[in-house]
Length: 297
Image (cartoon, rainbow, N blue to C red):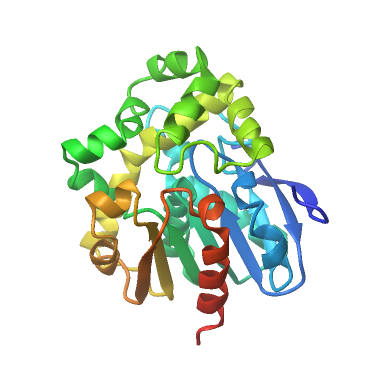
């Protein structure tokens, strides 16, 4: 799926953390980091990565807790799966690869990591595109029955361990098929090889735990970090573009542009005629939007 991409494994953080991030790299232009969401891995980018590598040095990674990257046990306060920790992973990867400055395109959970990365490391991120999310704090604070019904997993996965882990591990393939197949496009939009990798990664109990810890952090320590930034008047200063699916829950339940304007000073965006999984549902439109945004002064 990624012909010509070179694999890497990079140890990040301090020796006590013992986290390794796995990924792929190809290209020779400006650095572009691509981050995936739940319950997926770097394979979400297989329909756009080759074209992007013609212009950018493309870096694809698996987030901490997902894919081939490390899946450490969660801490009591979930801090080691905070978006701050996960963002630090990705920033360290880019630094180790030799990129002091880079841009990001990120989907779903990866977009939440990217949001924190751009806040914590503003000197490093040049431009950022976020796909089908509103800010985490805004989504939790505006939760209503429609959102909670569509995003039931936000509230299941945050329950104390080991209940969610046991439920998902009992039928990991059914979890992936139910969550992904229950959205606008169904399962037919996903390449069989990619879909199989999303299924099989959750056969590992550590991956299920890491996924749950990602969500537990978002409902606890991440909200503390986000509220602190708002109280301090910290906002994203870089050029930001947000895209969302016209048929996605984010598009139906929130006003993405209004929410992002609360936390970013330079934001543009629009809905695309698709659901949640933009890189796999509308790779053509994503490529057009990315190329246009990355060359805008």
